[in-house]
Amino acid sequence: MTTITISSRGQFVLPAAIRKRLKITTPESFSISFDESTEEITLKKIESLDEATDRINSYIKPGTPPLENIREFYNAREPKV
Image (tube, rainbow, N blue to C red; front, side):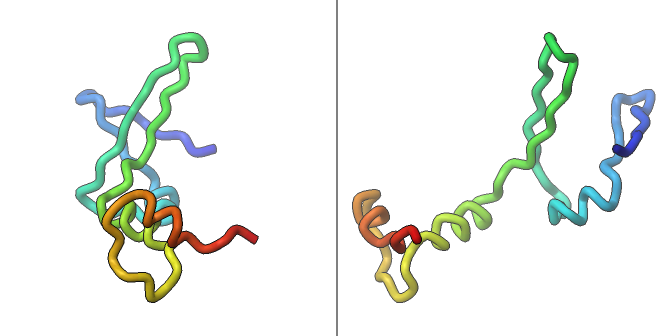
């Protein structure tokens, strides 16, 4: 566990090791939520359009022509092993 300090302006710095592990560059967007029952704050990295495109394309067989609808996407997915 790493300890951080909140500044008088409510700001904090994510430790370099965490930024490196998550491949965080600037600018980067995050969502933040607070659970009142546990008093836990959750910070989640928001996937960029390029990251989402790469993730979706990883499900498609190489050499598949551009897809025009979601049904084509599911038909083009590589079979699960």
